[in-house]
Structure formats: C-alpha cells, structure tokens
Image 1 (cartoon, rainbow, N blue to C red):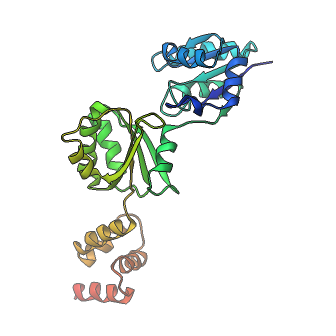
Image 2: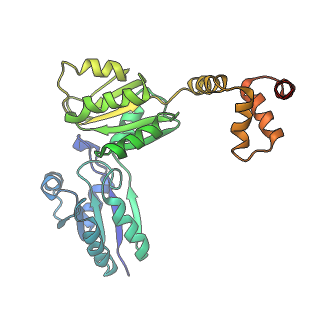
Length: 282
C-alpha cells in the first residue's frame, strides 16, 4: 500500500503552540520534508524527534516532490513541515500536494499555527470575509497588477512583509488604496509580539523615524461599500444620459434594459430617462 502525506503545522514562534498530534506524527513518520533542515533540526531536537529529514524548498520543489511521491508509493509516510506555520500557505508545499493527488496518494493536514489567521483574529478588523495575499511580488508590473485588483476589494486584506521592505510597501499601498484602517502585527507569539491599530498613512509616519523589526502581518480594512457607491454615482454624474445608456448597450443590453439600468444607477424613474432621450432626439 502507498504511504500518506502529513502536512504538519509547526509553531510560528512559541514552541508551546505545537500540537501533541504533530509531535507524534513527526516521530512516527518515515521521512520529514523540511523547508530548511538547519532551522527545523532545532525544533526536532527540542521534542526529541529522531526521524530523518530531507530538504524540500522553493528551489527544488518539483524534483524533490517527485522523489517524495516515489517514496510514498513504496509505502513510506512523509511528514512535511515549513520553517514556521502551516505547509502550503505561502510556501512550496502546494506543489507536493498537487503531485500527491495526481499519484493517488492520500493527503491530510494537521491543523495548527498560521500567521495570517493569528493576525486576522487579533486585528480588530472584520473577519467574516477576507483575502490573503501573502508576500506581494517583487516584480513591479506584477505587483502593480495585484495592487490594482485590491483597490476595490471590500474584504479584509491580509499581507505578509519583511522589515526591510515594510515602509516601501506601505507607501505603495497608500498610493493605491488610500489611507485605509490598518492593524500592524509583528513577531506573533514571540516575546516582543505587538499589534496596534492605525491607518496606512499613520503607519508610514510611525516608521519614518522608527526602524521596522521582526516579521510583519498587515491586516487592512476592505473598501467600504459606501465608497464604492459614491464612486459609481460620480462616474454616472460625469456622463450624459445618452452616454450612460450607450454604456450598457455596448455591453450587449437591449435599449429598454439599458434605460432601466441607467434609471436605477441615477435613482430616477425609467420614464425620466425615456423623456430625456426623446427630448434630445427632437
């Protein structure tokens, strides 16, 4: 029989956050895939785990995933851990999971620490709906494209950032999102854990004379529905009634439907739109 893949969440700071189940699974597995074996050996030594490790990281994820799948097809059980948190969240674990499903190997996830969820729940921002962007891309065009999609995002936004890029990222966010409400979380579960509410502009000012330290999670308020409606009204008000109707006709709407939608956008009866178009044609 084929073995199984166990995605094992490890602490993001405080070692007490590991679960009994994860410790037992790491001890019982035949092999552990670790993002950085030099980092993970400290965790294994702390819990007296002697299971062999092999490196599995961003730069070898395709070939090493193939190797690990072959080992599981031989009957071995493999546990996957990341440097901190849950494998597959903003790390190469997703590739191994994909290959396991293709090979018909069972995958299970052992829940535990995840910086994005930890920060979100303690942020004071809305938690019912959120979007996780992990680290923004380094490449400018790709980053600009993602920021553009976030500009109209109404869900709470969660982003990871390193200290040396924090100020630049905050300025880029302000340029696209404006001065949104923001909770800055850093060094989660560690000795110097900190979470404070501010705005994007306030954070820029705060770090203008204070050096960022530690790993950051930014929890940003989504765009308010009222803002979106106001922007739409401003857009419609900048158009003539004819231009507004033509906007929907270009989208494939029949003229009657286009007039109905235009009336709804402008908050007026459909008859008023009809009369204005008739008056224009006379």
